[in-house]
Image (cartoon, rainbow, N blue to C red):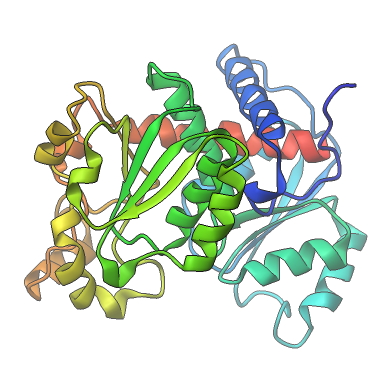
Length: 329
């Protein structure tokens, strides 16, 4: 029987089997090839999609809007402060209203509980564009990028995430790695170690696929890595923690020396973006003026042949389009 995800929500990779994730990756590759051939298609023709953004976004918003338009759907963009959602109207009531107008909902905000409640109360496919606990659409794009650039299959690949190992990207990678047989290590200071409950959950899934999910505060764990991944040191809403984070995380900055330490001349560097790699942003300049170098990656690494971050950014479009087509088309 053919695999179908129609009507499903996309809230976390933990809800999907390895076979279903493989289906989405293969579909994304097909849609990417189709777009490059100039075929925009109509797989979402006549569909109405609501995009709820409580957090700022570049790649996620562009991917959902362009992906939907290229397959014939119409989107409504709703940002914080322009509706009664969560203010004068409860999330439950809003979800039931949205269900009368729309065919699917994307949510990018703070609470994982909120995106799950939207799915529960609306009865529609709901897609997680990012929460404080998870970022599953990013992981699909990362996996597609790795498959395009790495000599190894995902299963058995070694990926090391350096930096704040208790943020949504680390947790999302733990879940994705566990599902797809990846050898994952979170590398960072003990003060920012992952939530033990998240580790336990990911390791339980990893036991079924041959994956491994580890934490280390020793930079030496990068030896043998196929992929080095990092993210900003202070997530949205955590800017007040920058002085503390710089002190804790500077030893885990991704440098050319770190890449050499992997012993892998073809090691790949990934970053979900935006990245602080130079001082061409207002925030990086102002923090440096205050005495804090917030760059989580050296500019030399970011611009090197190892870095495929812009291919990774493009793949947000193709993988998000695959999610929409698979669950709604």
